[in-house]
Amino acid sequence: MPAIDAQERTVRFKIVYCGTPLSGKTTNLRQIHARLDPQGRGDLVSLSTAQDRTLFFDFLAVESQAIPGYRTSFHLYTVPGQVTYNATLQLVLRQADGVVFVADSQMDRQRDNVHAFQALEANLRLNGSSLDRLPLVLQYNKRDLPNSAPVEYLEFLLNNRPVPHLSFEADAKNGRNVLATLNAITQAVVARFQEAREQHREVLRDVIAA
Image 1: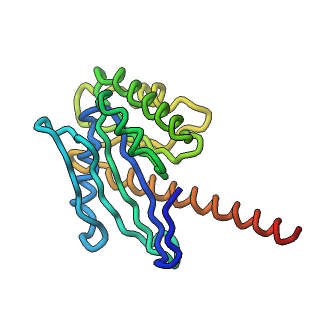
Image 2 (image 1 turned 90 degrees about the vertical axis):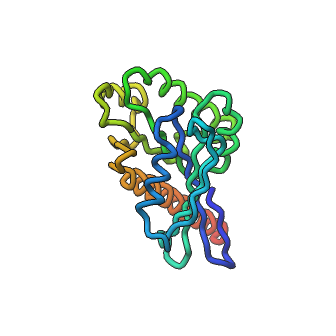
């Protein structure tokens, strides 16, 4: 649920980038930070190990006028993909409004992709949420590498459901479809928020009419 400050007329959404270790989550945020207008985004905070793996989370506030009359910001996080940091994943996923799952396209990383996706679903359940209630965009990263699995195979493993989630082929290192992924998830969380707002209005009308 987004954080709304009626007095300040601001709405803040939380978007979490998840995936396997070294799949490109932090690279996505670095590319977003580099490509956006400095006046429309905040500082990128990164805590990494010597192996350049995110130790806790990256955070980037992207300003937007997505909702008329309110200053809208999207706070972007990443979390480490290692199993040993599963508690961190659960913590960062709390009150998330949307998720980007960054999959490593290399054929030998598909088992890791599946395990990471299962960990995402499990931690959402522990937080009282699910992918049926939360907008999700899949990003198939590292499509520039010669050992990339076919997109159809990735779709079968990670997006095989009655209503598939939106997905993008990407090369985050070179910026391909990084902003397209961000645009898709921000539009999805705003649309979900607007749908919920309309539902609340209908409930209020029913109460008043009674």
